Image 1 (cartoon, rainbow, N blue to C red):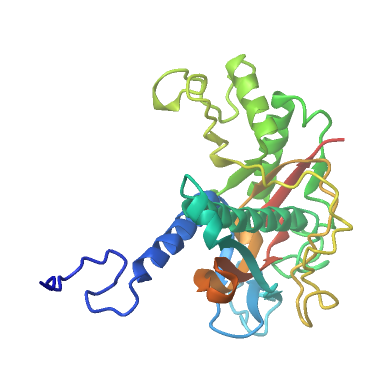
Image 2 (cartoon, helix red, strand yellow):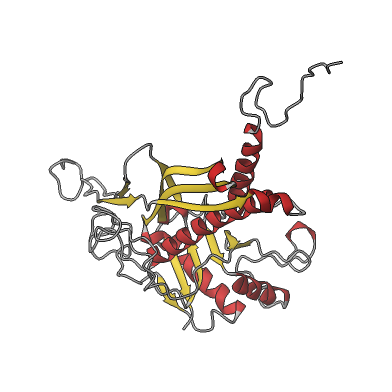
Length: 354
């Protein structure tokens, strides 16, 4: 007797009548990549982001500040002396740096013989690789901003020359001896950076301090020894949700959030030709977002506001998966297309060791 035809539950099918019985399985891979990227990319919200639908670059207008003057009765505001603001304008152009990918080809026979699931691991690692590349690019760009001169040349953002807002290249990249080995010295240098941001009218909210783990634990060590309990914006509590010794957290300094990341540059990358150049002679005509091919060997910390750098996004993080019959393997690819550049150098400060 012939067996009756039964309706099968197909967990990989988007609809019961769907022709692709593995559609939802592929989306699992996509979800794992996206989740890992969103979790691991610490700097994704620490830069000014603009999304474009097409094109090769985006323009970021940088506008100066206005000044005031008391009015003399009878004077014309239009024809009088120095009543009208000479507004300074600069345009920053950030170009797309190409399609960055992370991929893996998983042989069908290897997957069949393996005693544990590797797809989940591979998809997480692909997402983590993209997140690491994104964070490294943003961190390098923040340092690049600290080493650039102000946008408006000898005329400050208010249009007047000789103001405290005008500064030369490397004015915000300051050498502080022992900042790489002494937590108290490092904290003092960070506070100097925060003061510099205050002096240049950078908003006090959404400020960040990014350090590598070695410097982070130097700060915690100095705090737990009582060396940093005399103000300076540090918590002195060792209990409760602000405690630092038991949970190993130094949340803020001077009102700025601390970001601990291994992706803060620490080596000499001045000769690394794989890093895209946001210059007319580099990635494309018109780009002026600065260079990331710099020597970071002495970089210990960066103090910044997200306005210091920009990110233009053409393609957000996307994933693709395809079984290739001729190779008897599954190809998994994660990708994005973005560009990074400097916007406002005055919103960034670099602490360097001697």
